[in-house]
Structures are given as structure tokens and as C-alpha cells.
Image: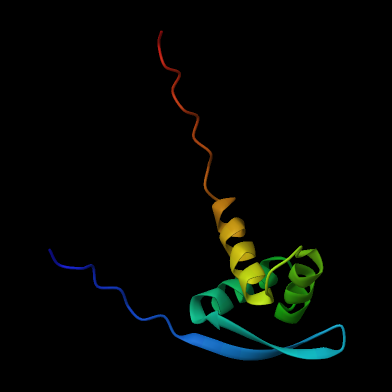
Length: 88
């Protein structure tokens, strides 16, 4: 059985400033691009969006919080399908 070919995802480290403190965030390039798209769609900068995500996170690291935010954003774009009712 052959494995599916998956392109390598490049992790990009960027410095961000939150509440006056510099920190480093490591995300795959696709997440950085998604953050830019989401921020632009909301009329805000990427640093503003990251600060908003940071202020809402309950636990875990900032990189994980950003990934979950992006995942949730795109999941909300998918229409919810109603399950057919089972007979009986």
C-alpha cells in the first residue's frame, strides 16, 4: 500500500508584540496566510487579530490558540447539514 504524498508544511517563526511584550509564534505558512485573510476581512491588522485571540484564550500556547481559531473560523463557513431522521 502506498502512502499519500503530502507536501511538507513549512513552519514560520514570527515575533509578535502582545501587551507590550515580544513573543515568538511558530505557525505553518498556511496559518499565517489564513490569519492575514481573516484579519483583512474584519478590517483589522494581523497583530490586532492575534491580540484578540490571545485575550480570549483560556489555556494552552498562543500558537495552538491561533490554529484552533483559524480552524473554527473555517469550520463555521461550512453549512450544517441536517441528519435524516431514522424511521422506526
